[in-house]
Length: 225
Image 1: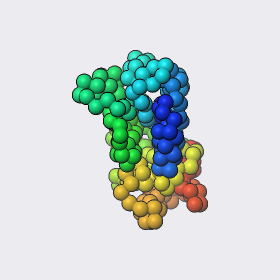
Image 2: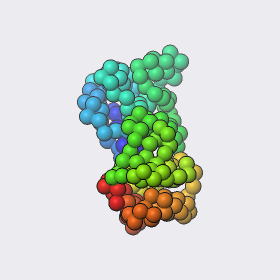
Image 3: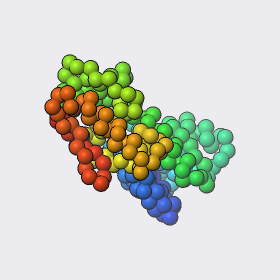
Image 4: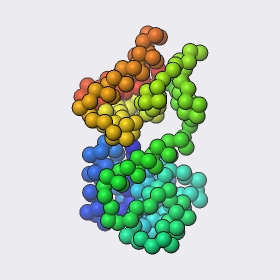
């Protein structure tokens, strides 16, 4: 998950960057609202994590400007304001979620994962790698004209790898986004499910679409093997 963090309190910004990195995500940190808006407009982020009170441009105004420009990237507002009216203002500005300070880091990560899952549906419903096609709308997978019956978890793993075709997807990322952290890296569940995906999308066709990157995770060939 690629997260843009817009937070002017340097110690908190550093902590957020560290926590996100340790959780297997990529964090880009800026400390000014106007700069945050400019960086967000370049795209490439899965979720925006934006403080309310920022120099240059406050968080709700940053989010409102993005929504006015047609940017739909999910946004979570961080704030010390706890009044109902403030929460309503933030949501009305276009934020998707709201977390009051102080907050638990585990809750923050869970909320970001939920926003990412919700936002993933905003992209293309159809993902392709050569003749391998996954349709998120119908939850169907096919290789050429051959339908491939995948379990729900196998489907989610393949969708994640297709979304990031050509890039290494760590086992931690798969754990975090497909299992929601509800398993253990020491378990062989991820390997078993990836093996099952390979058996369905590759073995019958003599392909090698999913490469194991030893000690890290997996990479899917954008050409479909």
